[in-house]
Length: 135
Image (spheres, rainbow, N blue to C red):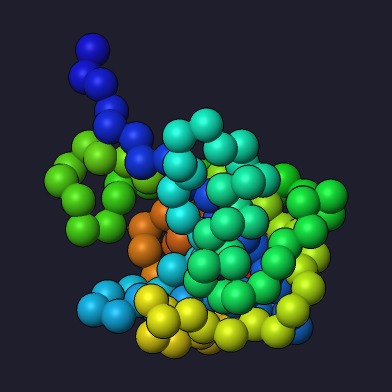
């Protein structure tokens, strides 16, 4: 049996007026739903809180985290068979959203912007759209 290589990531789904908060890093052509990879021993909550603080300078309230779903797809820019597994949560935050130094741009995307995001994010966009959360 062929072993899939899985990149284990977490994503924060922040929706406003049926659009989704997305970020673009320097040197990348795709927008990504904010989040990132967990470090050794981190829980979903710890990893998400840390990544979102690093990217957007806001503090997620772990008590408000709401599991949305786990989505898998071919990893963008990686060899065939490398799969990204994206565990998605929504959650309330405090502070003012502000892109950190590693983020070139922060943007609210709509379903029509699906061509601007990675493969796994396209699946997430489809799911949110089907659930009438993203226009």
